[in-house]
Length: 281
Image 1 (spheres, rainbow, N blue to C red):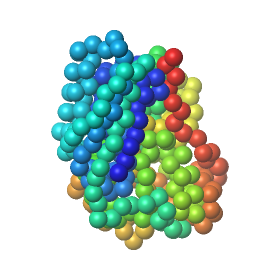
Image 2: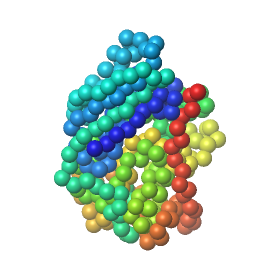
Image 3: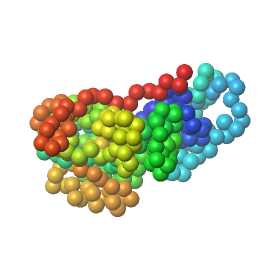
Image 4: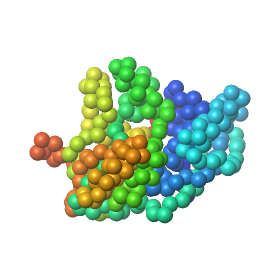
């Protein structure tokens, strides 16, 4: 079982429609299930609405829930509505699995893997908020990654039998790594930053720290996990057959709690930083 709350002023960026917001509320739960190898079955939603909400906005919410049903094969079976000062959607989801991938199974020597790249959503938030500029192609991809987050459920279900530990990365890669390190009593060395195509150029053009954009941005909804070295190729094939991919970015170490970026023979600590709620008020 999983519950996650979407609150308008902290989770709904400028430019996001009610349809996209309701879909995102379901995506948040689906992403956690994907990282655990859990197949979602059904969900309910408690919804807070302004007294001034329009019929069009309510219909948009309904369409967003329907989009989620069709995209991830999950059924909306009920919920509740009430008046609130802003849009609030609290999504509760139920799913099933033969084995749930935990956060505590990583061991020294395991390969650190991710199911996608990082940096697009934080860049998209900056562009949507008018705080940064981007080349047209990257800008559109970055904004879309914010407005329509798309956790890969099929990839997660295919990877689950092969992972020794995993979690969803919506709070950012750095925070996810520190969480896995604590739960598994290991450390991590990252040897390859999994930046999205165009993210480094975007950071350079806007005077941003590329590593921080990739490590600390958040909202990626990517699986971060570990796999035994002997199972890496099998896991990559499983991901590919499911229509996804698996990137090896480092390894687990015996240095408990120490998360480092290792490049050009130099190691620097990665701080436990990640997603900070929006502030639209």
